[in-house]
Length: 111
Image (cartoon, rainbow, N blue to C red; front, side, top):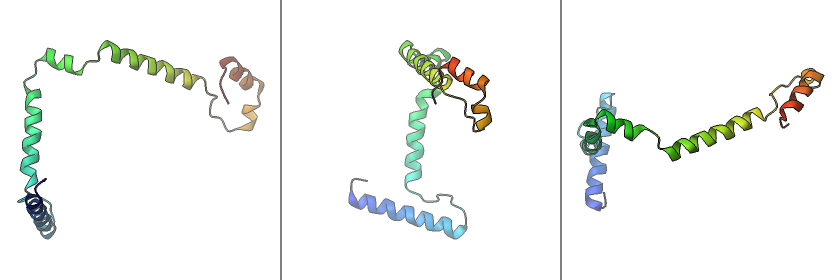
């Protein structure tokens, strides 16, 4: 698409393809110049993954030690933040009840 002439030709062909889809009431991308290029690109990128062994796939998809550590630390932070909050209760009678106030004080929950 760097070449202005090629870019214009592709845009014109895409527009004509869209018009054809509008005329027929269904977009089939007939004569679309980009669709074959996109399909080839996707197939090229995916072909390397089709031949992976089970071990290679496991290695590719598993977390390494540093990633596991980051996830565990984030989980601990989120758990502490969640447990450190006051329950979302709007009823004033419940919020002023001694048992509720005792619970909030025991957990150190923030207001």
